[in-house]
Image (cartoon, rainbow, N blue to C red; front, side, top):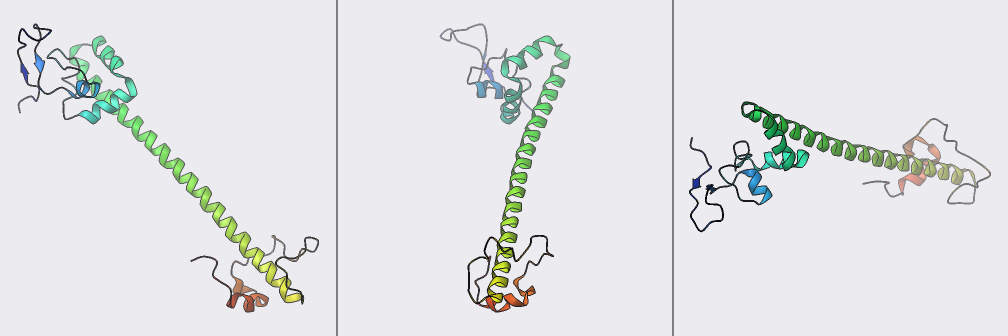
Length: 178
């Protein structure tokens, strides 16, 4: 397979006649919007088709740090170093995505718990209201604050059908949820 790095000799009208200019820039030069030459240090490791690979590595390490690392190690180890940086950048990106997903799931769980608590409170309030209405001739929206008729410590009853006093009120009542 031929290299996708195509070069041509620089003519006298171009500013640097000693170097060749690459027709298809490497992913690093493409992302950084600079001219890619045949002496580009990043071109052998970030082909034009690997734009996402360079984007991830650049986001974590920065272009100047990538170049600095490559300059400090022998040529024979550079491909492994770039591969390691790409692996670490991908891992960090996945960790960030998983953290965001976990935060969304936790927020969803908190919302579901609050919604459930609201439904339970509504059912208990309705149950208390039904008991109060069944024992008195005055129909009130809620029992007086001084006379508690229903304690939260009672055995839970989440369905209005469980209480005989509420059967009549529940038959004509609108559903709590759909």
